[in-house]
Image (tube, rainbow, N blue to C red; front, side, top):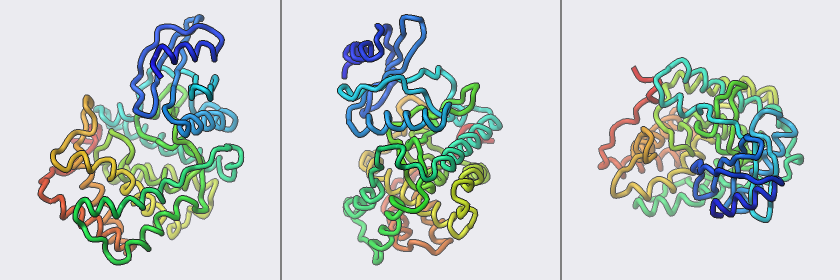
Length: 350
């Protein structure tokens, strides 16, 4: 939808004329505007290109409103015909990405821990409540692993023996016994650091999924985000521990390292496999930064870092040997890139 169409539909939806639309960026999946209300306040409008995004976001915001007041923006209204959502405007508070890309080490560390603990608490409090959401999660990990053979063919890599069995193990995360609610895309820039605490703002991929997927998100780090540098190991471990310390209230079994550690490694693999088909084709001939205007690492740096760190973790644990072999083969096939190592986040340098 064009901005004028969104404003007209949103004005009808809210029963008052909205003015002064400001484009907040959005993506190919949605258009996001800030609009002014007659009383001088503002509202966020989000028009989805696809029904799945609208259903997930409207359902997720409604679920959060009812069960976790103050977690995300309040859902003000939803228009299924136009796939349009009106939600509370949380203002222009900095987000986690701003702090990670800044120069305040302690502020960035504290925000990272708050981010992890917030999602851990959400996980614990949502256990067993799938029926209240009403929107089923798509089996995206099964779809992800199905793409790997084609990706390997494009890199002229022969699939190692045992790969199918390893990928089946990863795909089991889609329906494991540790399901929790999540906004879905918990990227640093989707989390505002407000005076009331950390507030997720993007629910277009919300639903129930394995607890390990959010737990592992700092290991990539942040697989679905543009804001990717290296997290110092101690900080990544601290974030994971903050998440786990909260999540065990919902699933006490997660206190067992024999359950936790393999689960997080599986989820890490799932994230790496998910993003490679999106990132690799665009940099086969020439590298590019992850963001056009913000200071970021390059795509090649990120891909090679994820393949290396994931292969090393699997080898140390003697798990998923065929997947580890795939990552090593991808590293060998891209050795000619001569890519510099992925640097630390700016906030953690020096």
